[in-house]
Image 1 (spheres, one colour):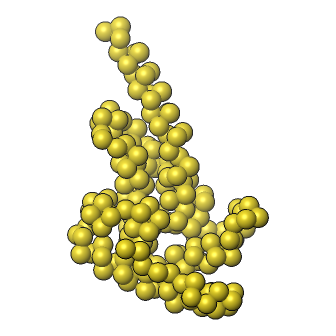
Image 2 (spheres, helix red, strand yellow; image 1 turned 180 degrees about the vertical axis):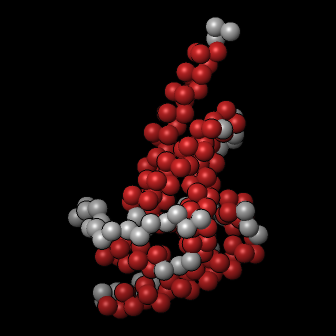
Image 3 (tube, rainbow, N blue to C red; image 1 turned 135 degrees about the vertical axis):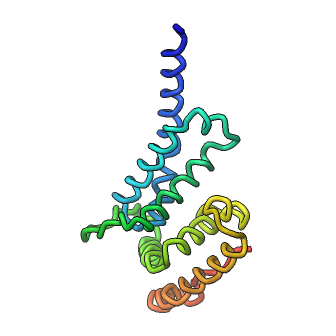
Length: 180
């Protein structure tokens, strides 16, 4: 029985290393879903809480990172179902580096906020996370047909505001195009 505390300690350290290594990417993905850095941090923390409770199973999985992304997306959808979403206070976005196309990024973020939560999750998984239809369906626990129709509908809903942005900023033709 003397090895049990050491095993527990090793497991905690392994989880800590995983969390530190994956938090940046998970936080960025969560931000794309909710459009609020604070809520994105909350989503990642909720996900880490769920992952930690089942860490022994998660660490034995083929791809713990993919599992973590799935948990973040499910936390987002669960929060929308339970109406736990808070109304964000007016705040300035984080400053981007001078080379970032800030206006374009902010326009895309604003357009994403207008999508229904499930459609937004599909669009972010398919086109931000670059996941296949099959992977997206598995993560969101929906059919592949639903993924295809929501992705198509989501891109259609993004085209209008982004086409207006492209025209206003003098970049005609810079709208959203479907990836194959």
